[in-house]
Structures are given as structure tokens and as C-alpha cells.
Image (cartoon, rainbow, N blue to C red):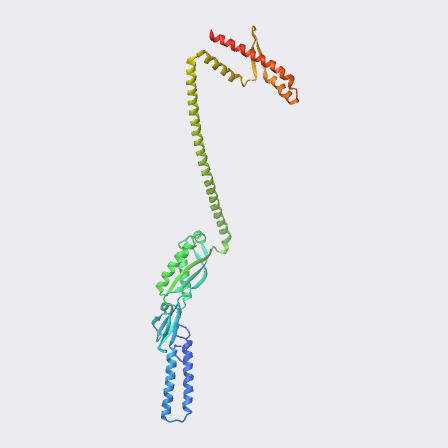
Length: 374
């Protein structure tokens, strides 16, 4: 049915024109009312002319008022003249001659969205179930009205085609793990180019991959694979943390060893220098009095050797045998008796023994001195 036929309620793009039908009904009712009014009066020709003028003014006023329309912020008015695009009006009040022109109001600021789910094939010939959503707005109201019969259906088909092409160039592991943002970005670019080639007047705002999973039949196997991959990454992170902990400790230990070695070297050098200095001074004293210095060195050496010994050998004057004194055995009862309180008796014995040892040492020293003097 043509859009201008009687009782027609659709224009060439399938949209209902409620404004035109209401206006037609109002004009018909008004015409009928005035026709009845004129038919029921019996005035002269002047009265008929006056009534006709009034009716014409009223009809013209209604016609002029019916052509006023307002475009709100964020909207655009698409003006059609005899069904053909004429111009686009911006926000504000406007007027069009009815019957000749018609205005379609399009909201270009509203963010529209569609969502769909489909199974697709990846590059490695695996099937993946993808749930994605597309958000868009209108960038050209005239293209949006004239070039698209069903915008949502067109966008849905173009979006599915675009995402199938992008998924076909990527492997499944990449799709279901870290590749969602990359796939969404590539799909948005491809989808926008397709819509522009259609002249759709649509601006794609975002493409969101809500879900990317393998089919239910193999979901468990892929879940195990994902867990294994996560365990692998966890082990790598733990190894990295252990390395970051051990390496600084090892470096610190190495620096410590180096510093200790340097300190030990300085200690040995200073000690050697001190010994050399002491030897130099001792040599000077030796040159002054060799016998006294030699005797003193001998005594000091014997004291250093016998000072930690617990066994004493005594050379008795006028005899050929040496007397062995087991000091370790002699001192043991002394240590035991000191704990039991019988120290007085042992102290006298030990003092006499000490005197004997001292006397033997004196005799030994005299014999050595005589030996050196010879």
C-alpha cells in the first residue's frame, strides 16, 4: 500500500506517521463542522463570504501551527520533502510546511548497545564460544534513517562477521586468556570500516568481549590446562622471588668475606711489622749486652714451653737419674680436697713441693749458664 493512499499508515521506510493521520482527522472534523454550520444558516452573500473568510483564517492558522516542531539537545531533525531527504536541523524550534515536508527526530547522543553469543573457529581450528557486546551512537542521522532498514540487525550481522575474521587469525589459547582486549580493539576497527562502507551513519564506541570459553564438551580439559598454566606461572614467580632473595644475600656475604680478608691482611702486615720492629730493638739491646740478652731470651723461651706443661723432669745434683713429677696427678687430689674443705693440710705439702721445684729450676738455670760461659 502506498504511503499517501487513503487509510495508509506507513511511509516508505516502514515507520508509522501518527502526526499526519491525527492532522487529517482534525481537518476533516473541522471541515464537517463548518459545512454543517453554513448549511444551517440563511444569511445573504455577505454573511457567506464572512464565514468563508473566518474558516480560511482558522484553517491557515491550524496549518501554520501544525508545522512547528522542536529539536532538543542531543537530537537532530531530518527534514523530508515529498519523501526525499532535504536537510538536517539542529537543536531549537523549527517550522516546515506540512504535506510538502516532514521532520523525523533522531537522538544522536544516546548510547545504544547490542549483545550476542556465537561459536567461532580459531586459527588453530578450535571452536570457541564468544559472548560480546557492541555499544554505538549515531554520527549521521540522515544515513542512519535512509541507509539502514533495521540498524540493530545490520550491526549485529556486521559485528559477528568482523569478530569471526579477527578470531580466525588468532589461536585459541590467546583468545581465552590474555587476548581479549586485543581482539576487541581489532574487531572495533574492522567493524567501523565495514559500517562506513555501508554508509550506516553509526559510530562504534566500544566492543567488549564478555566471555570467551571453549565449548562445554571440552570445558573440563581446558580448565585443567588453564590451571596447569597458572601453576607454571606461580612456580616461575616463586623462583624469581627466591632468586631475588638469595642473590643480595650472596653478594652481601661476598663483600663481607672480602672485607674480612682485607682486615686480616692488614692485621698480618701490622703484626709482622711490629715483630720486625721488636726484633730490631732486641738486636740493639743484644749488641749492647749479648750475654744478658741471651740469658733472658732463654728463660722466656723455657717459661713459655714449660708454662702449660703438667709434667716436670728434675735433674738431681750428684746423681744420674731424673726425677719425674706427675703434676697433673698431684693437682687432682688438690682440686678434689678443695671442694670438701681439707685445703690446709694439702697446702703445706704443695708449698714444700713448690719449693723443691723452684730449687730444681734454679739449679738447672745455673748449669745452663755455666754451659754457655764455657
